[in-house]
Length: 276
Image 1: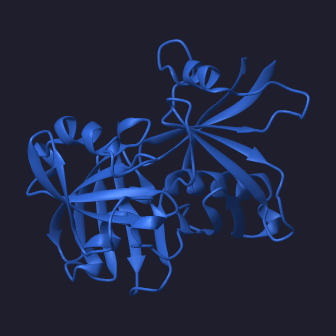
Image 2 (image 1 turned 120 degrees about the horizontal axis):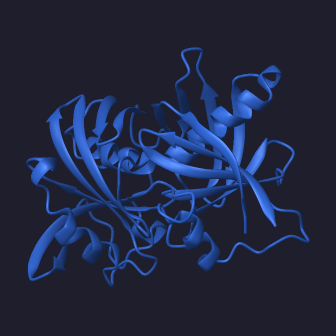
């Protein structure tokens, strides 16, 4: 079976985007997804985004997210921005404001006149049960990792995140701690791991080791999680520039209990088709 796809990227976080096969078509199991994700013999991507018909009357689309290891996850901020850009390009007459749905919930998006895309990522949830995480709720948690105690913040942005403050992201111990924290026993569904350097109250630098992927050039929900943790701890302002290896995003969060917005570029790299 042949599928038509787009290769899209947001801040270097890259995606295979395609419409769901017909009901009598193939099943995209984890081995097929891993083959597609291979950057030498497949298309190559951090996540695959499969677009289905809307599940309710209020949404334009329902999308599913698959990591490069074939595992399915709940949410993807940069992926949501790419889907919004694609839907607007397909039907600009329907307007710049879109409602989309995913396993992580409903997402509101706005495609700006300057081409940037903003998505409402919902209200950050600091309850460890939301990640899930084996812990009693606190402002910080200590994990014993590789013979060392590591302090983290933890938050769900529709998917689970652990955030570590570091002095400099260039020297952050990502290879040492990323895989160990991702698969730590206190996270039964694994976790994304962000390494955050606070430059100023309106500026952070961030690297993210993503669950099921490894370190990526950008992570939209990771940017949101880092700002949410830093702002809850009184270290950041309501508007924060987030510098990632692949580019810069803006995160806006007025206060606890309010909805958080992520803004950045989303572009199509190329289109193609491939036999599965």
